[in-house]
Length: 608
Image (cartoon, rainbow, N blue to C red):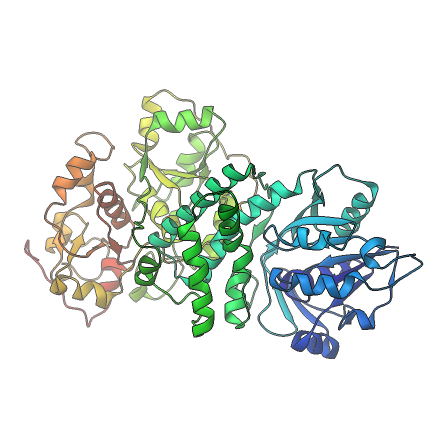
């Protein structure tokens, strides 16, 4: 019977050990320090979306406490900087029933990020199995590991190193891991899969250092462009990593602590950046390709470690200094019907979200069932794009909690790399809320269908009725803060600080002549009225051109903030501003929150 000896008790190693042990697979976890002591004293606390489990996984401190046999498989789960020492410790250990040591008698599976460990292992181990692991697990507190994956605990790709056909021995290793509930794919070109994972891991150091922002998104794009150039020079073709059915969800009572590099900064341990960013720098130097931005990020994380910089605490000013000349990319806001149809016909269909909603019309889902763009999923603005609260001071449509928005995004099928198109039947007035929320939460490619369902029908494209078939679950990880927001105090101060606060409601509500919903009529003092409806062309539900919108917003100056009645149609104004090349912040509570606070002043009339 195969025994899995898992070397390394961090997030990955402890997750694999816990799942194998729970499935009845013979398992031994090798840990050290406080993690070893905690597991020996009280077992491993292993939290999953289905609850918290105490796992009495067998544990040892190192090879001196272990008798290896020919039935053993070594799984190396230490961080890459520690891999060489661990390989040296285990390679020359005796193996009962074998003529030679572990290096020649039993296989070693390398679970590290990057491309270096397999070469290190091959210097001593005759049988090296490279692996790619997707597992959103974290280890910050001794004795506790949290795994946010659902429904399977992790996804793995295994292959011989050097690359080559699978053998019966590899099939046996994969079979044992599948008993632990893992999704395991055996491949013949594991190096290409590891190259793909490395390209994705270039996010790790940026995420560990910097808060979310458009500039950070631009930095990631720049780093991956350098990696692509390096791979092309080196003759490396990354293989696609498909993770269908695997998603990241919240674990009750646990806060996700981020990727492995961020966890290392949090625990004040050496991150593996030299084997992520540094691997791209190395390949670039070997193949004559400059990688100045990747090298700069590698150097910045080492300075952060030396200075004790808290994880994810640096801002855009530091990033701009680290990567001078970098400008945030301005992603497209709109997509026209012809382009959407072309993407669908070409097999590149985005996730389609039908967001039909209007004040006084509770039948958005009924309208959806009567006819929608094929494949579109209905999204209820009131329940899925807003929080539920009895506090009037929070406004009528507060931002939804991020875990609930992520759960919905997974249900809709949104992935890390795929695009999203949102639409309604009201010129984007409701769909823009979905656009803004998803962009705010870090989904990079979200577009509003210009003209919405009316434009689709005008082009005589087909429709579906009823409910769309279930999509494969998404795996996007949402992080708040990619678009700016304002508090009530910040909105109030904006006009006096040289900025522009835009009121996107109809003129009569701004002037205080009528107020059909909220307790007080009028507007925030200093706000300028530019009604959302004027973002559209006369007589058709299409956005005005970028030039026309630039003229419309010609008078705005300084920082720009926007509010409306409850934070819904203000998102349409922000989208229109973005089309014109102007960034703007949303006051989410908007007039519904402001007017419910009796301490807030109210202005009436046509003047700010």
